Amino acid sequence: MHSIRNFFCGQWSSSVRLDDKTVIITGANTGIGKETARDLAKRGARVIMACRDLERAEAARKELIEDSGNQKIVVNKLDLSDTKSIRAFAELINKEEKQVNILINNAGIMMCPYSKTADGFEMQFGVNHLGHFLLTYLLLDLLKKSAPSRIIAVASVAHTWGSIHLDDINSEKGYSPRRAYGQSKLANILCTRSLAKRLQGSSVTVYSLHPGVVQSELFRNLSKPVQIAVKVFSPFTKTTIQGAQTTIYCAVEPKLDKESGGYYSDCAPAQCSREALDDEMAQKLWELSCQMLGITWD
Image (tube, rainbow, N blue to C red; front, side, top):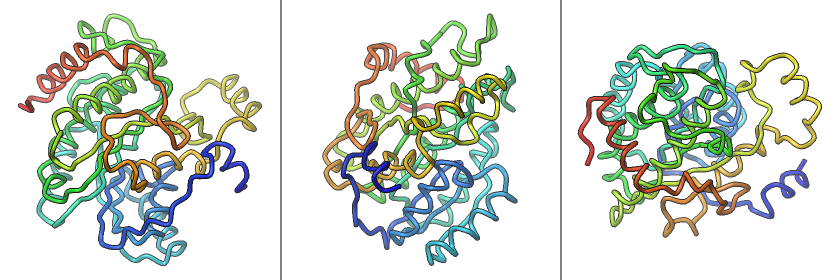
């Protein structure tokens, strides 16, 4: 097991402790989010699991407390497909927590049939991008107050599958689950770069990453033949523990203190697509996102 992890993440491992730190992880009850929570809990962090399904989150929380010996793991309701839920969650955090040192925007849905969020956004763009964009906006003052702090976006190499369609952002003219997923992940990387620029000099740093192909529940929407193909290739896909390593790296690696806005894979800086480096598009996307969410964020 360990040697496989080294194959993907080099020799990276870290003994960094997070005893007086607070971490929020969206979608922490399953897959990579859960393994990230497990690791950071073992480092002593107070871990807030932000989840839609409270029953499953509660079961995961019990398991993580038992495994880590850390009692400071809490569950809070967050449905990223509903801005009311996002605002209620952020209000609770801003009221109850004196600090948030690490925000991990991990939750996501992948290649689902066409549907819309409570606010009428295409589901993948709405959850994977806009939901996290709003959450970050609402928690930013607390993150600044808690600096040095980090914001991490779990993106994907799938950002190369899509483009940002400013004139049809909700895929109403035509829907490809794959392209819409790619668009949402490209948006994660573009907005991480934009946010880094806006946060220069604040000691809040931001990172986006590709976790590696992970056998997790993201595959639940794939067709049977594709699911079988994924299983056939599973020697080359990562377990959720390996899949979580780059997220953990971006959360705790001391060397990243001075870096911000970059894209990572296998616990190292990685190359993203040319479109992901388009600053003009990043700015237009930022403005459109604010407009869609009804917020002012200069």
